[in-house]
Structure formats: structure tokens, C-alpha cells
Image (cartoon, rainbow, N blue to C red):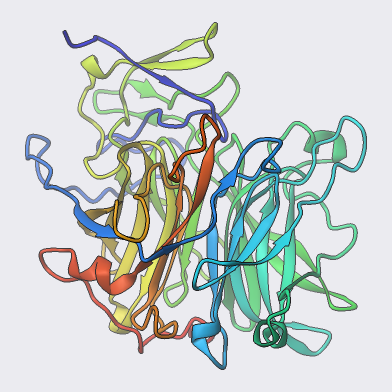
Length: 463
């Protein structure tokens, strides 16, 4: 017997894990949306392409014995002399950062900052991205930028190529002392935890910028990095934009995604098309947005795809703190390619404007692929399954893809993804890690091969 309601718990990262949203041609309040439509709703969805990973990082555990380590988001730094020596920088939330080699072995661990006082929240590292050649004290420096959700800051870590070559720990904290919270008014407000969440970075005309989303809210901020002196990094706000919190469905009915009381549909996964200056942002229970950056400001957001659950009625069970999603009365306004949460977003750059935008469809353990060009047409989906080297990927949060050759192991590029259920499991412990996948393996898994272009784009010189 089919249940009339589907109960989806919302132990958030902000309020709802596999909960809801995303629907038809409705224009969201406050930001008109252009939506790329696919085949009719009755068309059967093709099976996702299947690939396997080549390597993985050590499993981490989100409990006291494991240091409360919960893998989330990766970024790849490309070594300027030997790309096979490149590294992967990854967030572990309350446990801080890990740095890995391309073989998946840990090279460095950096703890998150402790709580500044009794009753305050400790640091909690959510997302990470790389910018190259930022001028600090007259020297060009590569940086790993991290959203510190616990303390509502952006943290900056200088990457030392000489340390990488020597096999020493390559990251060093260069965050300016006294940087202000990104969203909070003061330290007391920080502890309410409506703080820096998702993060994506880019450079424009020699300056470095970072887009930061806010936990439990729809707001995005654009920050410009500043040389604070003494080799330290600060930042200042350049612009902000609010994505819609509610939507008008066909027929005029108002709808908003289910969330904990007082929370709104947040964004986490984000990436910037470094050639075109376009931000792609996954509003978890709504869908995938495209926002032209215009260099130093946000343009009008456009919704290019919706999650399957968009527009579905719901109720909130306050006793169990759960959303109850009424899929039996789904009005059919949602998309077909993403199931909530829409998560990790990354951009594969190729020549002549070709390439792809990838988004994690966390609700069905797949990744949706869209073109970079035009209205970002949907091109297909893939899953990362059990293979000879690793287990498969489930409930992926963060991901990053790089087109350039990375040594003999990844001569045609690399995709790194978070795995929310790493195996073998260790009893009831929450076990996570990161999987490394050859880009050419992803490309060749599709009926019409995706582009493999390791030569046309250099992340160090995106312009």
C-alpha cells in the first residue's frame, strides 16, 4: 500500500536534508526566473551513466573519538611546476581542514579555531575554494579560502609550493587578526549561527573575490579580498543579493520550502565560471541558479533548474522536528534532474566556451550535468558506483572538477566528490570521505561522450 505522505526528516546542515522544492514556470518573488524546460513530465527518465572512483581519502568519523570530523567540500590546488604534485584541500567541519596528495594520502591537518569563550561556538569549516596569485606584501600568493560557519568568517590559508615539493605541510593561516563577521552584527549574533556557509572564489582584473552564502537564509554576499599588511588577508563587502524565500506557483498559490521554524531556503554549493564570470548556486530545496557577476556585483538571478520536490505541499511535525512531504499530492511543478537537496556545484572549463556545470542531486545520489553555454541545457546525469578501488558515493555535498592534467594518475583531469556514507562502515559511526574520479571516465560513460579538454583552460590564468 502506497503511503499518502512521505516523511522526510530535516537534521539540517541548515534545516532540511532531503526535503523539498522546485517547481514550474512560476516567477519567484523578488527575482524573476528564466527556467530551461526539458521533456514533458510524463517522459521516463533515462538511467544515469555509471562511473567508479580511482582513489579515496581516509575515512573520518563525526564523533568524539574521531575528533568530530565530517568531510564536506574539496578544492584542488594545481602545482605550477609539476601538476602531478597538486594537492586537494578539504573541509571537515568542526575538525577543520585536511590536505591530501593525489593518491588520497593525508599530508596535513589543520584544526578549526577553538571557541573564543565559554558559551561561544568553535570554528566549523564548511566550504573551500582556491584563488591564485593574490598579491600580499608584494608577493604573488596562492590561497585556500574557507567559510568558517562556526565563527562567521572567511579564513585564508597561503599555499607554499616549496613546502609541497619538500613534502612539508603546505598550508599556513594568513587570516588578518580581527576580521569582521561576514553576516553577524557582533559576536553575540555569531552564536545564533546564521553565519557564513557556502563559498566560491574567483579573480577579476587582478583582484580576488569570494561569494559567501548565509546559513538558514537566502542571502549571498560578495566580498573583495584585501591585503591587510604583514602578509595577512582581510576582506570587505562589495555587494549582496537575496534569493527568493517563497514562490508563486501556476494558478497563483504561494509556496515556500519546508524548513525549521524561522529558517529559509539556504544555498551551500556554489561555483564560478572563471571565464564567463557567472556564479552557479544551488539553493538546496529549490534548485540551481545562475547569477552573472559583472565583475564586482550580482546581476539578476535566473533559476535554470528546479528540484523534483519544488511546489509539493508539506506540513511540519514540531514534535519530531520533521517535514512531512505530501508527494501523493505533488502538483507536478518540479524538475526531473535534481532531487533535494541540490548540493555541490562545480564547473568544468573547456575551450571555445564549451564545458559543463555539475550539481549534486543529493536525494538520489546522482550528479546532473548542464552545458556552460546558452541557457545551460541539461545533458544527462551520472552516479559514482562501487568499483574495484572504492565504494560508491552517496549523499554528496561538495565537489570540484579540474580539466588540466594532474600527473600520470589523472592525465585528463580530475573530479573530487564528498561521499556521505563511506564504506566499510564502522558500526553506527557517521563515516565520510572524498572520492577521486578520472574526468575522462566520466566523459566516456555518456552515450555521447562529454568533452575532454585538458589544454584550453588554465585555472592560474582564467582570462
